[in-house]
Image (cartoon, rainbow, N blue to C red; front, side):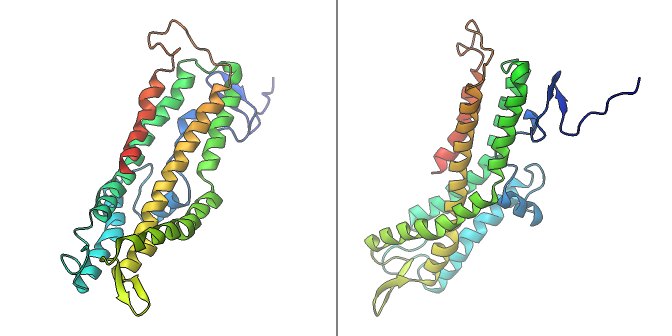
Length: 261
């Protein structure tokens, strides 16, 4: 008997057949392995699949955001002293660029390693019923499509250079003369390190932070959509959460990004 060829869009996973050509296996789930920035990091050799070279990324991005500020402020005599707040005495800038920014980059590996097993356990523990597996795979696929959205990342980039910049500039006038600003004929204007900070360092930080907010929203959306399935939960499970207790520890990984804020 001649075997019937299987359609390319049909995949057999866990003993069930999915007829959704765009469905993705839960083992492929990741909130960080995708998007234009990730592709850029791969091409510039600041990342290696899946998330290797994290130390290289931390050093490179931090140096681009921080080191020119030190050099430019030193050339203007505002690195250690001068009128107002000097660069190295600006605690807000130092913590933002030397602590929070590296933490946001390091958190990618933590989130990736915690959330992928959490998603696969939905299937491995039988929480997702076999008949709902195609819908579950569709939710995974949908989440990763939103993660890879070029339009959304460009929108975040536009946001930090417009709304984010304007909000920061409005608050800048409240601090008086600092290493960021210098007196001009028309009042206070951005210094050379101030220009670098306003148009490069701060946007880098804001963009990476907003991407984390977006990833958190994606995770909440994923959990909400999964909750709408007819999950096979056990009221006598010792975790006292019907078998979903492991989600609490996995979601706690986002605490790293909360600390960075």
